[in-house]
Image (cartoon, rainbow, N blue to C red; front, side, top):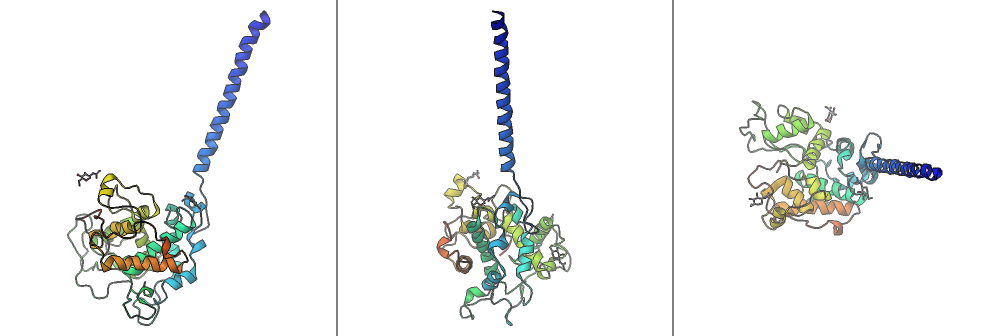
Length: 313
Ligand SMILES: *[C@@H]1O[C@H](CO)[C@@H](O)[C@H](O)[C@H]1NC(C)=O
Ligand SMILES: *[C@@H]1O[C@H](CO)[C@@H](O)[C@H](O)[C@H]1NC(C)=O
Ligand SMILES: *[C@@H]1O[C@H](CO)[C@@H](O)[C@H](O)[C@H]1NC(C)=O
């Protein structure tokens, strides 16, 4: 009887202890799981301290010879930025963005596609290729690093980023930047005084690639997706987006970057030229244009920002 009286609480204690042990084990397991979800990796100078660095980095699948293949005519005597652009500048610039997912999101194939997409824009916007150019019109990306005969100084009254006297804000860089307010905005993003010194973008290839990557990785407006987001699948279209025919894919990257300058205009050359560069690079990297992805064009898409000046053109 007395044994029974003692055995009951003892049993309860044992049960409670067991529950406690179980709870501690569960919490420990949850902790391990939370830690593994947040696991970060470092791959030397190229990609450090990020979940994205655990996957392959850009130089694992995109090497010097591939850069040379993509931009094979950039140092030919008739090009306009001979000796300026190189592979090392591209990789150095990317070290700030690979830890944020540039070229490192979703595995190797998606990484190669994103590099092709980003460089497709760059190649198209810096090309001096024309129909009968040697090597074909798509071999001439990175031919320019600035606009040769600007028709204006691209200065517009702006409260945040007023023009500096005597400074010209014509196109410069890898995804050419135009207008004082875009130089100001991107300069803020990079913590470099581009508003007073837009010429830095034609003097420093690493900075020029960084400016382009900043534009690729950041939305034009808050609450909107970046070109990176719409390309790698980070972005889920709202009902409004679907009604406006804005869907994830390469087409929407043109929508983010250029709006109605390129998109919603039907089957126009300005759009097709960018797509052609993207697909040419996919082929050269061995991914193949058959893997261009859904929603390749933006011919029918309504622009994200119909009235806003695009960041680059
Ligand atoms: C890493 O790559 C795998 C596929 O290889 C992919 O499923 C995963 O999402 C990638 N991780 C990140 C953080 O993108
Ligand atoms: C070029 O720009 C990069 C990145 O902003 C910077 O680290 C480097 O010092 C610059 N090079 C020169 C010669 O100014
Ligand atoms: C959707 O579009 C309508 C009409 O253009 C607009 O009034 C509304 O604010 C939009 N909704 C969102 C969430 O953007």
